[in-house]
Image 1 (cartoon, one colour):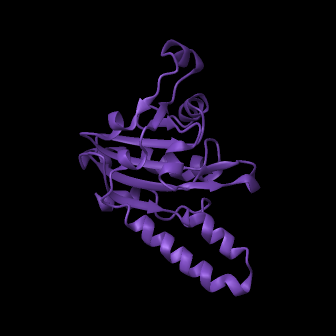
Image 2 (cartoon, helix red, strand yellow):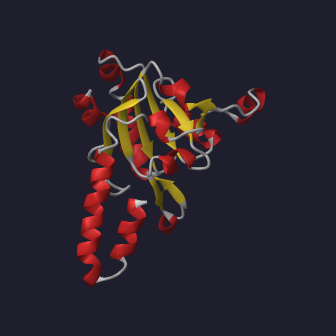
Length: 201
């Protein structure tokens, strides 16, 4: 993956700086070309797990939701983040969408979705804590397969999080990506908030 190559080049020292810069530029171009692609086709066979309690999981036989059911025939704003209960995610990212839900709906958005590399039970508790479950749909990507398919996986082992997701957002119309924003670092919150995506719809 381009992001992995950038990290490898960066570890090579000063002599590798030009290579790292070139690879980062290539990675940025690759992300830009994602606009216009089909998000379902980009992650073939992948399903997400809707946030729920453990008992609800048992009752539904631990069912998952295919991406086509989430995106086809709908206008969807989706944002991904490193993990539930973490700082920027709790204090800024989710609240930006919760506080702008009426503006998003007024622009014809059918659903606003938050996805993270967490199990659906943790996400359910977090959504309830943030009082956001009635306005935002939360989905788990428990094994990271969705984010791996989109080349949005990042190693956050330094923060004891393991393999997680970049911080990102997208506007998707009938499966087609119309706008796509990825933060340069998971600790940043500059381009993936609701205020930015509102101007892109």
